[in-house]
Image (cartoon, rainbow, N blue to C red; front, side, top):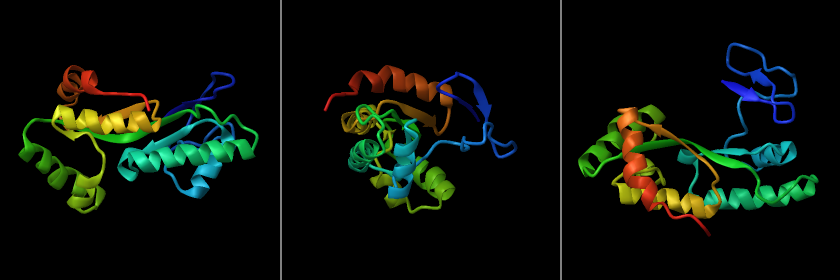
Length: 173
């Protein structure tokens, strides 16, 4: 993984095998929505990378609201806090059995979570309309970017996303 220092544009290396340079960089990005994590994010002012499979649109919006308030307390800007959603697993299919199989046979074992909990998440898995509705909810909650992670056949999934899902996504609060 490589990070770019915002102020200078200098690339810094971060991975499990190398130290982060300069020393004040942390490997990775503050992820999640715990109160302590949000305080760290607000203090750095660099942005928030939330995990789609660990949040919901409502929790994401609440996290952005908390970041705005925390940022004002530490003297950082509070409007338009840079943010993105990661670990946004994607599987566009009109076949409900295929969608179910992706959840029960791929995600549930990989995450060590119950399939019913994964079904309740707002992940874009299923028909194009469902994927668009779920991503639209995040857009309305304030998400600026979404990093998609196709679960299989990556190129075809991204093509389906471009052709069938993007035209249906509605933004704006």
